[in-house]
Length: 156
Image (cartoon, rainbow, N blue to C red):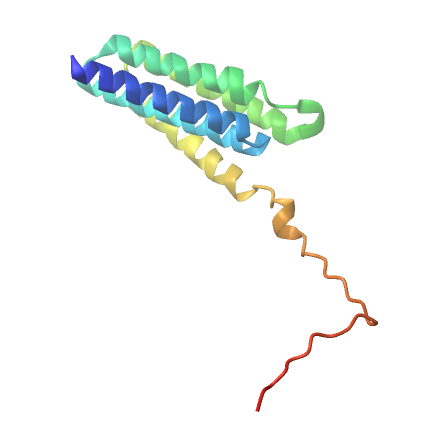
């Protein structure tokens, strides 16, 4: 009885944490969160496959595909991104196809391949993170040559 309440409470707390992270995230951070979600879903699918829990494996793979298709792939702007966006679009399509194959054939090697591709993309994406303006701008100090200088008084 208490275990289920505790689990539901922890799950609700985690959901609030994720929602808060999404609300306050920059567009760049949102992409990182999508990569994390897809990687986690594939890792879960591998665990479920190993445990023989085929329905849960299928749900996890479906979740990974949804993140890739409706998150990562949908966020591409081919007009602005040019060749890079077109290449990523093809890569995301390949990933979705391989995940479908892995699901149909219970193939852990395909799951591992796509998880590693996503990890590589995530690392690359993180290295191109924009530097926040607060870090790049030095505070402006005003100098008034006519302003009185502070004096130090020494007592003897």
